[in-house]
Image (cartoon, rainbow, N blue to C red; front, side):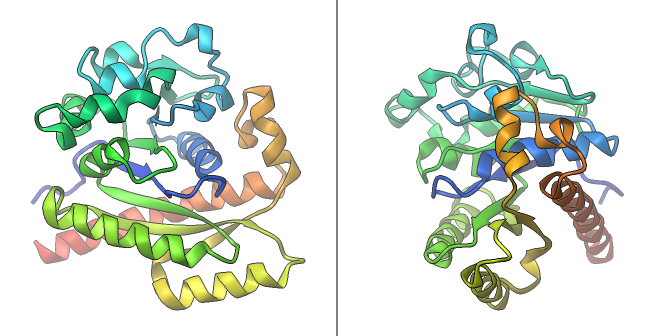
Length: 270
């Protein structure tokens, strides 16, 4: 057993529900990891392309995309674009991803295309963060098959747990069928409103159900975080001192700490 993870570690940021802070978490976690010295690649797999726009990559500048990567037309190196954030690169999204489902259906080894595409990435990065589409479809399945772990953003609202139970079952199925190493790295509570009793109740429910899988860090509702994408900047760059940015910096520290603990457990097991 090697003394370290194989680089890079691949995180799928997934939740089949839209509007839970998935893209915001992808952008700001990737930025925060880069800010603490990690080499990070963000892959935007959502046809809406919000992670690409949120990092200032205009549609007209997206010559190569995650679509090209998924369909084996280009390599990771062909598709990577720099961002304004040091040590953070991106593979932008493409509108073509909206038709990817139909194209994948008839392909051989259709579930393994992303895994194969990322196999040649080498150790140029410490972390790959993949922003999944808001659906449990073949594109998301490809990402889960390629990933080491899933980070689940969960909005503090009434139906949150229902969707999470469904996602957990899907992850379990992927683990049993395609990717035995896949695990939920953690659940991050987003859009937490301290003035709203429901937020606290949902947080308590999620913690009682998932225990230590839920990160201690909670991402608050924050105007500055919502404004940042319209400037093509991560919140952490747009306003590092706001509560939302500070929360994402804490989350990155917690992710790294959890990584160390997983690694230590692997050493003990070996």
